[in-house]
Amino acid sequence: MTGSISLFARRVALSKTKVAPSTLFASTATRAISSQSYQTQSNPSDRYFFAMAAAAAATATCAVASCEREGCVRDPKTPYGINAENAIKTELKKRLSEQKEQLTSPPAFHMLLDDDDEEEAPAIEAPPQPEPVAISPKQLADSPDAEGSTAMTPEEARLEAATLKAKKHGGGLKLFSGNGNMGLSLEIAKLLGVNLGRATVSRFADGEINVAIHENVRGKDVYIIQPTCPPVNNNLMELLLMVSCLNRASARRVTVVIPYYGYARQDRKMQARVPISAADVARLLESMGVDRVIAVDLHCGQIQGFFGPRVPVDNLEGGIVGIDHFGGKDLHNPVIVSPDAGGVYRAKKFKEGLAYKYGWEDIGIAMIIKQRARAGSVDQMDLVGDVNDSDCIIVDDMIDTAGTLCKAADVLVAKGARRVFAFASHGLLSGPGNERIANSNLEECVILNTIPSTPQRAANEKLVELSVAPLLAQTIFNIHAKRSISALFK
Image 1 (cartoon, rainbow, N blue to C red):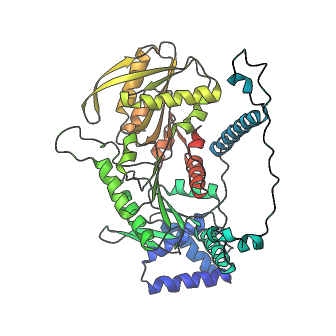
Image 2: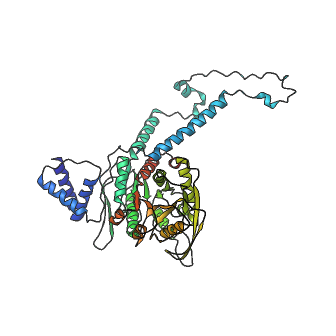
Image 3: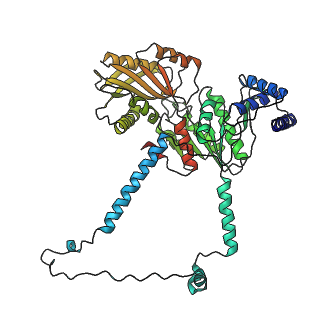
């Protein structure tokens, strides 16, 4: 009976707002696939309606998710969070032991004296400490020095308690998602123990994007998960409109989680009369009222500086996910290879992570110098370093058409490498990218699920996809709980 009443209410509400039937079907179907549980509908018409909704959601181009269970945000307890807690505990124990040694060690007054005067120096006694005197609140209020005290009247204390209570209950977490990567968003929501917020992101008949939020977000801490992957312009416009919609709905703070930051490769002027698109996208997000940005492996670190000081940017290292994958392999004389000069720092961090976590001290590092004929085409490649009789891991931030990656694998094999692996945070695989990897000299190519997968990728035996959801879920929780993020990467 309850399901029938709620279903009838949804029909009446949507009929009053003149929402298209396809939006209604997709809304109900997405609620069905979310983590919220629903009772079995006993009415045959209800079962038919939900079946039609699930069928329509397969072809609908809108994302609608169910509301959050209030107060159920939990620590996902991912390996990154557990390692961070252990690192913090170790640091605290170290500081406490140092303070204890300083308190227990006697003062070395003899070090201030000469050797000749050491025996004749009089003993120095510490002055007696006065005993603490207990003062009641009434004595403190009646004292002449009470004028400058911070004691509150009962009315002020009541108002202060009401303010603290409002702050405590007014900053609940809300999680929303666009159409960019719904699978990743649902995985993050499941790890956090919440449901995706109810929102419609669809298109009008003329192609314009329609965004509607179906629940209260006033005073809430809102997170939007939306990569700006292909189709880049559609996903970017969805993100901008969702940020604007939530700000106009009086959200307390809007944080955008961008697993893949589009337009990141145009980060400087390489020639005359070209835009700096990465900076322009940052200005668009900032002008919409974004309060914080979470990204995974930005193409260049200076993109963080394109945002103003009022918008902090957290650039998460996707390599920490790949370290666990390659740490379990039996690699012979491993060498980390950077495909260009700009990625040497990323390769060095990957090497340090393997050395620290798995105790591999004999890891080498190499670099490939490439000369491009034009964008997406490499003219010549030269290797700097020794890879003879080694297992190589090419570490990069993204794979687009995979032309550079496959040529780099050919160069390493020609220089005597035993096996060649590849790791990248973002697997765009545009055009012939997937086919090139399948026919290349690569032993294995590992990517993260920052971009939605396709059936063609799943059929590629050399392609391995790891999930970045635990890292993003732990980061969202730490930000919401005001915990450290840098501790996740120690």
